[in-house]
Length: 389
View (cartoon, rainbow, N blue to C red):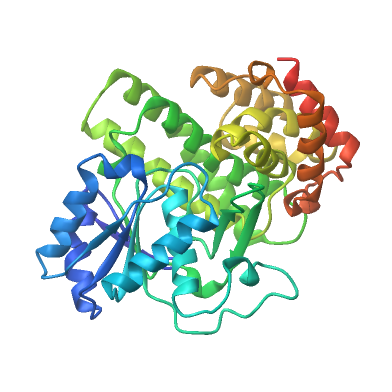
């Protein structure tokens, strides 16, 4: 696979082995003391050491911060800022999935901005993000959130696990190294959950209310790429296929689909994400898995208002029938094929938790652009349907 370079919406080096250019680009940008931000799971694998060696080959002195696990919380950001300052870092290299990429952005905010992180939350009375931000170089190791091309960081409160969004166009990484070789060892379950996260972004952004034809087109092409590669990636992961050309190609398609999803959801998302954010808050469920479980329920809820759009998706994927019902059937078949649970029954949610799930889901802003208006009672019904399966 040759290395391609895109400039949309930021500079992207895509292709097998593109990570090898990190050291040279960091050096040519004038940096020599990066903080490498990754998570505790990746820290136990060879990848961070390899990235540090690539940087060292260009005389960069790297410190690794890996104090991230699960859905990221504010205290992890605070520790990362302390490590940045102790190292006298001059840039950030973010390595991993959505969690370390988002934490890297949040660290960048607090390095030169006083006060607590959530004082800069995306709301009307937020403090401005107007000081100098450290430059971020992003290396995704999953194909899900697309945070490497995003302008926001999603970080949870430590005590309540409520998700908060910090947003600024200046948070976008300067250079992305989208290297499908880094995804070849991703386990089947994480391949499935992150892939369904990307798929949810693509579907919900296309359906979101509002006029944004650029995002609509990106979403549809991203959907085509994800539909042609997610199950392949899962099957390759389950078989332990290694670095075959077919596996690398499939991972590359999912990387592109993931980035396209993150670009497309500038238009907006929908009720699936509100339900998923609530599941992550109340049950600490992985965000991609929560999306994957709830997506078919949400799409059935949306059917009466967006049958035409779902039918177009069906046609783009070449499904028999070419209509909305064919698309919904395909979605459920895909979910089963990659062994995503069909519902929430196994999580044994009690009535108090259900009340909290509804409360947090309705308070979440994503459903405000859902194609069909969604009340708190509607959300309760969707959770109850998922709890029956």
